[in-house]
Amino acid sequence: MARILAVTNQKGGVGKTTTAVNLTACLAEIGQRVLLIDLDPQANATTGCGVVKSDALSTVYQILIGRSTMRGTSLRTEFGFDLMPANRELAGAEIDLINLGKREYRLRDALADIRGDYDFIVMDCPPALNLLTVNGLVAADTVMIPMQCEYYALEGLTDLVATLKKVRAKLNPVLEIEGLLRTMYDPRSTLTQQVSRELERHFGSKVYRTIVPRNVRLAEAPSYGKPVLAFDRSSKGAQAYLLLAQEILDRHAGSAGRVTAALAGTGVEP
Image 1: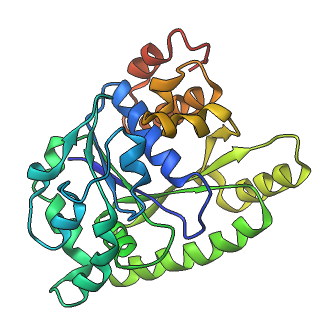
Image 2 (image 1 turned 45 degrees about the horizontal axis):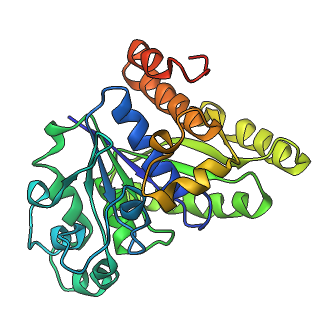
């Protein structure tokens, strides 16, 4: 059964979509069967995978309102993983879901039929607490929180943890924090180092060892409709997300051999 991972942060601009797309690509690269679900009406994860947004495109919106099935909607990307795309229609889902039964459980129930088809299902959630995010959190087993090491990020993290506790108490009792991922990391900043140490002190092993640095290739790759692994495999950004995929598999599956093979030629030590 797939492990369902929600990539979320109520604060925008922290590398959430970048993480969802590139982690998915790296997990696929090391032999995992992966589905990426774009739950954000901005659909940046969709375009970041080379899929053109279109009103005619069958999307996760049709899944949520019961007009389509998962198998009938997902697309196979050229990067070795499947994508459940989004477009601007998804912005109206908030209104449409209000009058539907079990509105918080629509995505969870839709995923039940395909969990056996994948090893991982990664969801890119919107940077807000709305019904789309709640659907993602209710469907998820764990949550990955990308965050910058800055003061406002710590404040936002407090709010997010409180939200996750409420969701666990009322809607999804098995929901756990998978880990905190430090993104856009600049080791030259004293504040960045201080916040990083605070995260490690408060969250311990929940903080991933892998750190994603500021990297221009990570910023450029979406404009080409590619994960950074396909855009520039030797870049520091690609190397960081391959190492993150290794760390996740080491935590859950012990698949170090496949990761080592994928890292061959990148200059990264597994």
